[in-house]
Image (tube, one colour):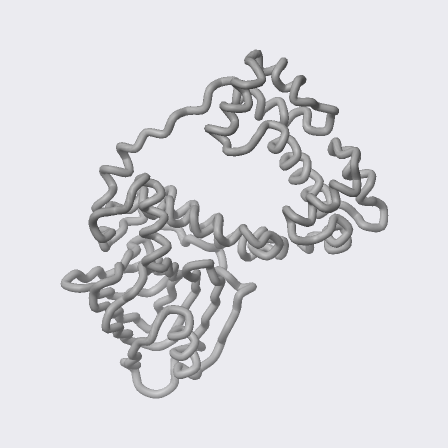
Length: 333
């Protein structure tokens, strides 16, 4: 199986590169949980240990290298831990189960049970921690009710299997995006929550668990054609003067039907969607613009805004900074 990443991931989130295992132990304990470490080899690590860490609202994404044979013991894992080996080999023990993993064979360990893992000297992993409460609340939201059994995943995950493909693509996309200087993770306060939700959704649907059949059986109503038609029209004509009456006429339904349809399927009005679409296009244009040859007014007007004072307020509410601040801090490639 090809490597998941061309280079060690999360390089912008370097915490440690050191031969001091105690430093790494303390750092990993802060991010994951208290644990015991037993270095199997003798003397100093063969290579430097490395810790990269990107926090999530209810968890973390880590790249971890110990540079020496090691065993980690945790009396009881209090969260879900997805282990994706990138090199070397390891054996993970969770409860009565165990999985020997190499690149291409991942592990999902759950709470409630004793946990241990043994790493070879050349082992490196991408680790994704998701808090128990976050994943179970998210599962309850998907089910539309409180769950009645503790969530339990099948431990081993063959990454070459079709079921794992979506999860792998999701992880790769998120990690690659985090490594970009202008990642939404750094520019939008809500981005990390959306990344976490994406990870939880794909994990629940791609890795076999005791709710898999129920999740697969859920049927979500498809939005009617006039919703999709209106959304497409807004995307194509957002910069033009558009009124609600204009959208109603284009959708070929009554105003009441259009408004009720958007409330039910999108939880936003069509005019609110138009405003958000314009704001998103302005945000992208400002990030890509040359501040020496462009200005906020021209970009806002070109995207359909006419009330510039109101535009600036709404822009800051959505992106956490003023339009001029976005323009003055262009994306560094």
